[in-house]
Image (tube, rainbow, N blue to C red; front, side, top):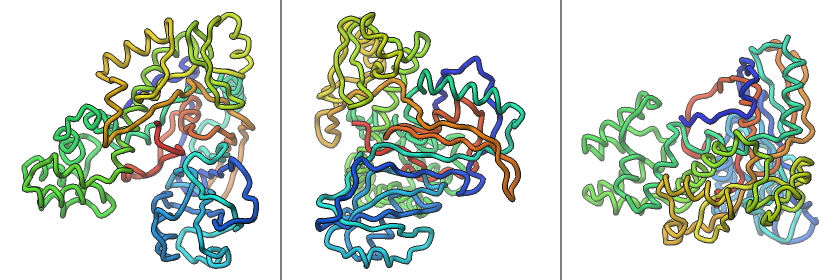
Length: 423
């Protein structure tokens, strides 16, 4: 796994455990705009427990007898949680959607709108997290640390779930971008590591021994990409480049996005010592009120706005149309990207085609509060907060708690809190 430094490195994180139960982690989407009540698209608010967004889409599409691509949604949501998010489907009556009976999912509300709901069409997410087996006697100092995060912001890292249960999806993405397609297949299907156990480890070992058919049968059913790619590899008589075509575009995009995310994280790490709210001449600054970006000509003049959290410096989500900063910021990014072998134009051709964008180095925390609580399972600290879209709750939690996730590793799409691919 990729270990990233905390901003509050001098604050001793409290021990803690999250997600001992689905109800310990609640996420509710904040829509980007209200549905206007008219149109051919039915908007519906779903509450799900223990389901990935992708699995919920599959189940809903099957129940409504539509294609899964007909179901619109604004963001990927964590699996081991109670999550509430809006979805959409066209030419299906709201009454029919409201009557859906799907395990671990219920429809809370329906309305109509003129267009399909798409990735990124949300303002943010509100979280309620119960941290158990922690140090309740440190409540006051944890509240003070939370106050520091509210004032200074949180490192806008892409979280560990972006990189899969082995932490290596970015390496698969790098191999795809660099057209090392055989390397990409080997990383996806073989090379067992410490995170691999049981059937998964055996499947990877079989692949490394060239037993592709046996490997495809060994992978657990939830690893659909791996099984499908291995079956294609058998049909292609072991030609790995041809097998890559079996990986659907969404999954390939996910791997490339993980590589972009890894590179962005390296820039955050590099700028953390001088402060993620510290502007440099030539920076591309993010306007938090409008999500616009402008070039900083005089950092001394603009710093007061950064101190007020109106603006923040940005880092690269690399792509062929990404704007680059000037001055020290541009030199730093160029050095990191060059050392990693990343070239913007390499993201242009198919199957990559990533335009790229800028992302703030820190994110603001709103409506934050931490309090003691107790239920039938015992005492806990309850943390409530609201984050902008695309930001990871786990990056805030790890600033305060050295927590463990009470869940097993899943497929590459499980446990995402992001709303769209990085670029």
